[in-house]
Image (cartoon, rainbow, N blue to C red):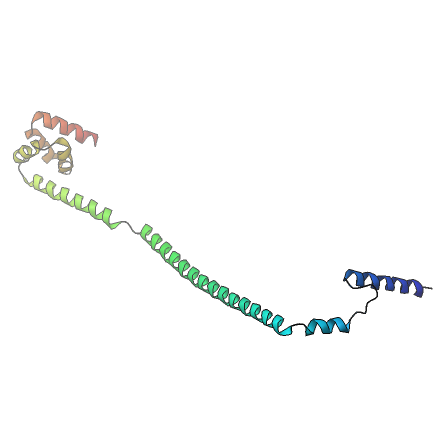
Length: 172
């Protein structure tokens, strides 16, 4: 009893599957006539078309692989350059700028040498020359001279210039 329903189910499944595949209802699974007609059509033309398409596809694949390799090489070079530039930037950040230091050193050296000249002069001669300069020019020169020498030079200067110079020295 169980066999009959099983046979009916299998038969129905066979018919449904054949219909779903586009075959006639009671066709044999492999028709030798249709298979022989399909292969005897123009096998040379279809095969050559497929071979040509395959060759073109293979060439395109090779071309894309070469491009990918070139891009990877370019990327490596750029990454190395970026790494080098970052290291160079970090090194420059760590070292003080020689230009700024050198300019400040030169200015300090010049001021020191001019100050030494005025310190060696007599107060009267130094006062005569410093009277001709503006008070803002005199301050960097006179402020590094010792207090006794400053007092002697300012005492010999013009009263108005000495007053302006004193004000500037007091604000520093």
